[in-house]
Length: 467
Figure 1 (cartoon, rainbow, N blue to C red):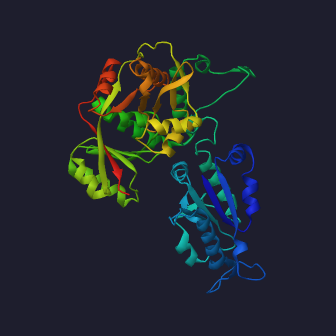
Figure 2 (figure 1 turned 90 degrees about the horizontal axis):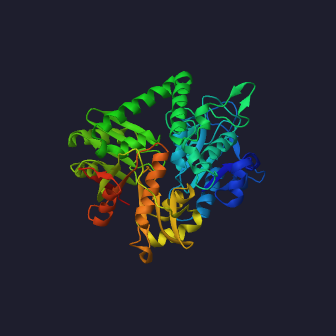
Figure 3 (figure 1 turned 45 degrees about the horizontal axis):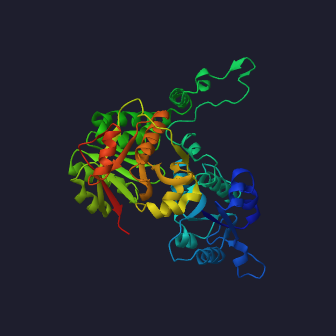
């Protein structure tokens, strides 16, 4: 990911981002910082970039010309002629939060404009800015400290920046709960012991302890967040009244990956926080139209993907979001508490070095998505005589998928071994295993049933954004 910062003081930006994990990410090329000095683009021979304010007032204002030319130089370097999201750091903007960081982390390029003095000439702001963002209700001497904070928060969500991609999903504000208490060695310090649950080695017990402590901490310190969490849990309870049909939505909530956009007796609209995929279930066509129109009226953007639980939503989705039906799948859910038996197999986590292999054998998504899954440790390969023979993965919303066995290794039970492994891994985390299956793929349907997964009677309908 590339961060471009338009500033009068580039050294403040580069110095603030040169250490720790962000510095290491810069060294290995996971992210790039391009600090552009606005002063280099002024037409004034004294390198002046500011002037007095028309109509009077204290202080000086950054002129439009050097800012605009600096901005155009960045666009020329990026190429492609596409619109790049440009963030102006100002106390008048929307308050920055984790959800915004997750949204901006999906961009390939981001431009930050750092104001100084009394701000920037309004005419250039109208020309270039897409997002007005504030760190809070206070004033800084310039936009550089705010840009550094935002870049740090966004960059750590970029695949490959953190050593453990799962860690960003378990920290404060990753869902609606604050982070649980954490401990390290020694086991006993000043007479206080590490909680026994954390020493048990039981992944499910550890997860339950952490969730409970996170709930207690949030209820005490952030009752506003806890109220949002309770609303989400109530939504989940209602979805589980039709468990097989809504397991994907219920799991999205349980795994703290869901943003609740709308919920009442007539329907629910969720957004997967990382990818932006929408999930909707409704009682009627009229309710679906009302919910989607409300979403758009509140500034909601059309996602790349949307899943609907009712076939009658096709006309509504096409009308409101201009999205096209791409496929419909069966949803398979593993409802048992015990995993199916796993034969001893050589199954390993795959890294980014296997990207080309995945691209050669799996064409249902794009390169960026597969790289994200690999970087987050969500893809596993099965090896025969130290040679990769197939793979399986976990999609961004939590479903099992990507199951592929290479032609030379089929009919050896490798597909069964891979999916059994994923079921076992999912259960260990305390989650419910589920996945999507194309109805016409009889071999896959048969495999799900063999492993003890149940098929929902209703299908899941997938829609794609018209490009």
